[in-house]
Image 1 (spheres, rainbow, N blue to C red):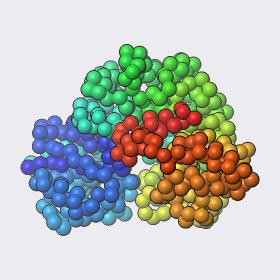
Image 2: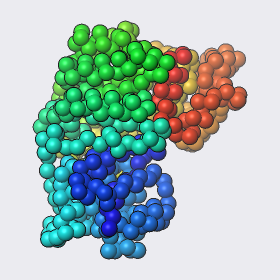
Image 3: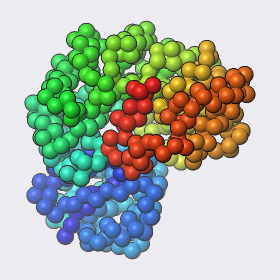
Image 4: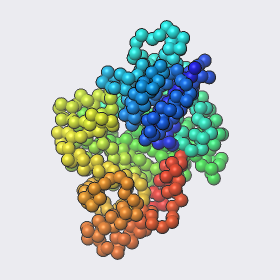
Length: 501
C-alpha cells in the first residue's frame, strides 16, 4: 500500500517545495509515502506507467498554472487504466473555481489552500475509514511551528543539480489584485532559529544555491538581516566556495541597515527580484497596489550604483487602465535605472485573484486556456497585445540573456521602448518566429537591423561580434553546455554575462 506525491515541474532544476512539505508532514504514513517528480513535456503514457510501478493506493498531484493541462491528461489516463487508484489534487491552480475544471471532475478529492495538515488527514480517512463523503476539503492553516520543515528531504542529487527553494515566511500583507497572495491576511514567519538551522544543515551537505519564495523578504528587517548575515558568514568563511541567494523584495522599503548588509555581498552571490509592475499611479490604485514610485526608483538606483546585487525588476503589460504609451513611459523610466534584467510579463488571470472584477469596466479579455494571458483591454487591442508578447520574448533573448550586453545600448538609444519595439517588429517580419532562433542567426539579424537603422555595416558586425552572442559560432562557451544540461548553477552563469559586460 503506497501513497505517491507527484507533480510535473516546469524544468528539471525546479524541485517541488510543496510536495516535500507534504511528505515531511505525513506522520505515521511517511514510511509508505513516496515522492516522484516529472518535467512538463514528458509523454503522458510514460508518466502513468512510472507512477503505477509503485502500485499506489493514493496519488496526490500538485497542480499549477504551468502543468494543469498535462496533469489533466495524466489523471484522465490513470482513471482509464487504474480506476481503483484514488486521485487527490492540490495546489494554487485547483484551489479556486474548482467546479469549472475538468481535472477536478476527473479526480476523487481536492484539497484547497494549505495541504500540510489536511492532506495527511484525508489519506488516513481514505485508507482506514470512514470514507470521506465530501470531494472538496478546505486546507487547514495551522500555526507554522506545528508544520514540519521539509529541507532534509532534498536529496544529494537535488543539492548537486537543482535549485533549492526555501521560505522564511508564508503569506503577504499586500493586496495587489493580479497576485494570489492578495488573498492572504498577512505574512506569517517561521521560527527563525529553526529555519536557520535547516539552512545550516543544507549548507553542510553542499547546498550553495538558495532561492527564497517569500513574497516580501524585506518586510521584517531584523529577520532579513539575520538571514543575510547567515550568507555573509558563509562567504567570509569560504570565499572560494561561495553561496548564492535569491530574494524577492519590496522596492520602496530599503532602510540603511539593510543597505549596509547588501553592500557586503561580493559579485555573483546575491540576486533581487523587485516588483514594480507599473509606474502609473492610477493603475496602481486600480489594482490596489501601494507603492512609492520615487522611493522605489531611488532604491533601484542605489542598488545598481552601490551594491553587487543582480537586479531582476518586473513590469506587467496589460494591467487595467494602462495603455501602451503609459507602459512605454514606465519601461523607459526603468531602463534609465539600469537594472540587469527587466522581466517583461504579460498579465495573467490567476484563478481566484480579484483582478477579474475589472473585466467589464476595462474590457479585459483573457485566454480561456492556461496560462490565461490577457489578450486585449479597452486600451490595448489584440494585435497590439500580440506585439507586446513578441517584444517580451525578444527582450528576454536579447537583453535579459546578457548575450548582447555591449550591443544593447546601441539598440535602445534615447527611446528604449520605441526602438526595441522596432527591432521586435523587424525580427518577427524576417523570421516569423519567436522561439528556436539559433544564437548565431539572432546575432546576425541584430547586426543587420542596426545597419538598416544607419549604423555602418562593419561597425554593427564588430559591435555584435564583441558580445557573447557574436561569438556563438566559435567553440567557446562551456557555460552553454552547462545551461543545456539544466545544471542548477545556470542562473549565476547568466549573471556572469552581465557582470562581464
